Length: 327
Ligand code: HEM
Image (tube, rainbow, N blue to C red; front, top):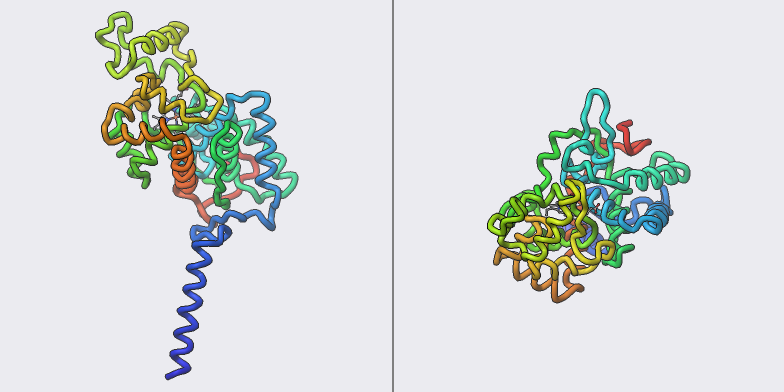
């Protein structure tokens, strides 16, 4: 009896130890990913990605926005599995050729990092991890928060244009945003924090011209748009559908200027300004506009969550040799 009790106690202690390890050891993660996944197999993986990203951003700072957006568009469709990187073939039109993805850029930065990683540790580091790390490094490069992410994502074998229907549209109102993100496990606070990614980069006229219908007659302009800012947007659009409008005054700096622009009714997309229009999200926007540290904290938590969306483990995925092609 006492021997049996002793074994039961020992097992309980072991279970407790595992639980404690799981909660404290950053190298221990239940879904097959871990912070130090490449510690033995490719110890300089993080550094190789970081150096490649930093070098690219030094010559073109606007690519920070591109890398951040690429990670979002990867994770939201089929999970964070580098499906966004696959090139179309004669038998398959891939995600990247969907209208929602045509303005994505920065693929060559991922190719460059992959090439170096293949020289150092062939067949080890997934393209999905490179995209996630590159986004993290781009945020930090722009002056945003630094956060660690678990690694070990596998690359997917599916990339189909039709799947991109699940990306949120720039015309969405906050209920539609909350529903779309909620289906993936994101809270209302996550939606507002993640939208803050629009502190970097630009939108093209085609993404916001819905707000300017007949923009010469004030009647049809989106009432949530400041009249002077409406003129700015109209001026941008006079150069055509692909003309670019920065989301805020500091397009290459990761800060809370985006939220302050929303307070001025100077959000670029319907899906931006709606966050200030709706009472449910307005208080969060106000909070981030006043307190950049709070935005940074919530943003990094939401990004970590996003970087774990439907990750593929083991035989459900592969480590691609070339990020643009399934093995
Ligand atoms: C909330 C729903 C979202 C919608 C509706 C949305 C939509 C858009 C649209 C339409 C553009 C401009 C594309 C163009 O005109 O070429 C854009 C740009 C961008 N998006 Fe989002 N987005 C959303 C959330 C996110 C999230 C969660 C992230 C990243 C975490 C993100 C990162 C970016 C970045 C950085 C850019 C600028 C890209 C560049 O300058 O190259 N977006 N987004």
